[in-house]
Length: 398
Image (spheres, rainbow, N blue to C red):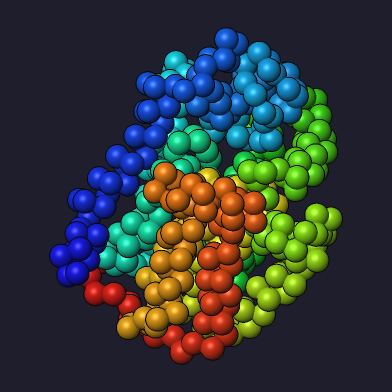
């Protein structure tokens, strides 16, 4: 057991596994496409093609949210700021651009984890816990690792008293995907809240205007006007999706056959519970308390989002990893059960999970959300009751 633990905390092994297992799914999709469409080509990198056309449509002043079946299936739901993020990758052929995009996402999330106020063993444990989730995200060429990194960087910059850059992380994350707005949860940890607020106003103005340099003010204004109804329509589609709606609301509605469950019936109590977890003001400067809040924020973002699907759980699993490495040692039997439960069920879409169980129970009842929900409740309990220490939980080099 000690040899396995040593291997799983070996930096060379873990980092190598992180990047190799990020590369393999997209490389397989590029080199061995199993779905070919006469119009769009390799459908395995369809998400990347959607992202690419976000930028192309921006510069051509073509609607970002309309259907373009001649290029890709599904729809784009990302705003004009994302077009500037994806722009550098569009200069390459699609296969190369998709690989670079996936590896950039893996690298930026790796960098964010490395910047957390943890020791090396703890950082490696977080990466190991998230290993299968980064594979799932990479196989779909998704943006979620970048969103996770932006949320973590907002926390890291605030902790390091770099509010100006924290504000950029919050605003750019929100402009790419609304998930990024959860970085505001770290507002109370800032020593200069006025600077943080003014910086967010500054970056909001900059990022609102910047896409206009590549298109026109009127087009950007119209795009933002069109974005809201697009997101409303997407939310409605998520609720009836067989693959999506993998959240607490989806789990409740599918298990109890309540298809018209109002999201707010679950979301409002969840927000109230989240708010209550912040009441221990004396611990706001405690690193362990701050990290638990970061874990709570990441998990909350996914398990209470109607847009969640299996590949988005890279966000939640990074939160699960942060929670796990901050547990008091020795861990309890229930905590051991929770981490194993999360590793098994959250990765139910992989070929290692029994297909009959996945098709009969996990997918129909959105059970992927269950372990993260239980862990989130455990985090809330810890934030309200735990006596926090200043020393790191695991031993290792910083």
